[in-house]
Length: 429
Ligand code: PMP
Image (cartoon, rainbow, N blue to C red; front, side, top):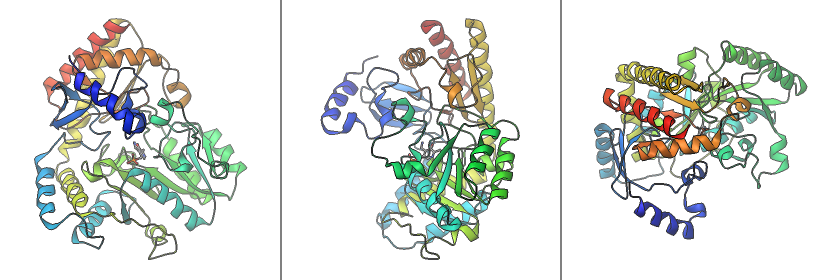
């Protein structure tokens, strides 16, 4: 497989872009080699600048749940661009979008559109602080909530892959207001809340973590967090940037039946365009300017092209519940296939999976939190990643990411993945 175009582009990119990429994990630092530069994508496939085809399991880190270049979204965008690209003024589409989100996501009574998941989480904690009059927030080790200063403390995803869990440039003052707890450890959380009684504005978590690899909440864990937050007057924020519209049409909160006070959204909600959103209880959201005193704004927020793509996506998902049945089936089949292969090749590695989220951890410890995720053999993962790439399978280039399955995967693709996985394991072990 020739990748000379990609290699040349990367060399040039490094002269003009920090590290050659516009988001760190894309640089393949965690897996070695140089990144592939993508030219186009359709359905379950992406194509690089050298003309190589890969079966795709990143899907733009989540948004492309229907596969690439879905015709309904293409049409929505091409219709929208006939009317100019941005107005910076209210539009009908924003109202339709808000109404649709409120109807789909159980916790959301009012919603504000922004341009990324990072903006959504940064804004949500500001609102929670304004609403409660408290300063501190709790996040979990290994959860990633975008690159807002408050969240770059024990963060997952690219922040751990790059080995900068605590980034320079984040002030001590900001860091002091972010408390961290280990995921899935209720006693530790109770102690932390007790030690900071009456000072905690918000607790934010990924209800199913994607950013330390896929990690599921223990039975009863989300319920217990809900109860604790209610008792202590803490605003519970589910960061559903990854899980929203993916684990169910109403996200993890629908799937687990736990209703947070606020929800942050991104990825799928924009159909591949840069979109985020945060929403929640009416009483909390009415703190947001101009209804209330908490300021938050955006020149391109609610952008008509982005709203058109997102609306087409969400309308499709709402009208086609079979998408979720199928994605569960895809996840179950791949998980069963991978587990069978692991047995055949004689290793006992951990597979975490729910719906269309999946991670094969190169460790035989159960992975339930950041510490156990970090027990994975990272050099081995790097070799496995390259062995898969060589076989035309494009995985997330880090152990600390979830794969995302798309609705465009057909049974033959699933079998292709399972077979490639077994061959790759045999090659690297
Ligand atoms: N929250 C979660 C759970 C995420 O996975 C991400 C991005 N991977 C973000 C927030 C940040 O979103 P964005 O990259 O759009 O800023």
